[in-house]
Image 1 (cartoon, rainbow, N blue to C red):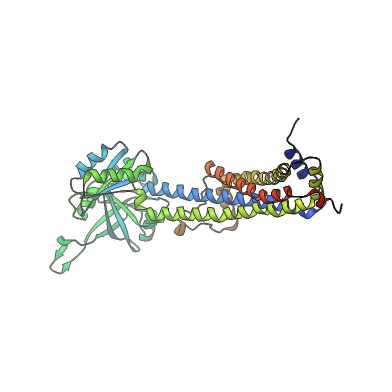
Image 2 (image 1 turned 45 degrees about the vertical axis):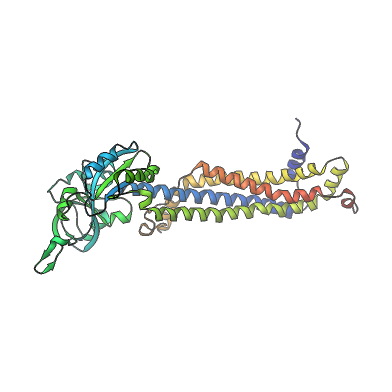
Length: 416
């Protein structure tokens, strides 16, 4: 079967045993380094994708994708605002809520927390907190029942369980003035449920009660705002801007990305920095090909001279060594991609095995919000990593191949 001369000779050079074993070692080292760099890059990007996805899902399980609030304590004309929001084609669900700070007193300790007042029958329209209940039911939060649902860690700190009593202190308002001064309002609640969101921010700092009970406790004439669920969570900022324009200056609309902008920007920056650092590792490994090909060109001076005397053009000579360098790079890329994909897919299981074997927690939930190593392989990332590595390898072959093409037959054969 016919093959181009450059491809034929280039592949023969790869298969042939070399007189200088150090050149073979450098070539293998370049291939292995390239494979390790690509494996590390794919695995790291997959872990960063997993962190991003896991945190998004956990945050959106507890907060809405967009919110509309009033300027004051209570939202004016909130029913009208709900009707306007429901007419937006991207809005799938709407529910009112109250959110205020409080101080909780339990059996063993006191703890500050955020109180969120909800309507249990409407809450599933905007969040799936009902699926995160580990004790009791969200439907037990009925008006005037004075029931409360606590995060798991908050319940542990307070030393309470379902059926126990918790005293909730509300910050004083202008109407809380007594002859002895301004005093906070307090009310005894019964713990009717415990939830676990998987994020310490909510498990240790959030308590939920019926919205009407929250309005009475905080002496509010209506909810703090309304929460929205959208057909596309990445449309949140655009929908929020549209609603802000429709409702006017008395209202403020925000998407979930605006509410947690700094957090997700930090993750994106970490992902970018890690990509750049590991890309430099791939670049260094790819440019190891330069040294191996330069030494190979020096070793093959007589072969190049003979090819030139037989009529090979400088372009053909250049093609021979570019083919060899690219083939070495492609083998390293293929090995790296296979190992990287396999590692990214099995990384959570590998991390769990290491944790069970050593008894050491790799990720602390108090620091990273999650206690497992997430991994999400995206083939688009594998594609650009593969393309980038191939370009690096191609660039690394240009100088040695050009140097080979400049070889003069008479000079090369003078001492042969």
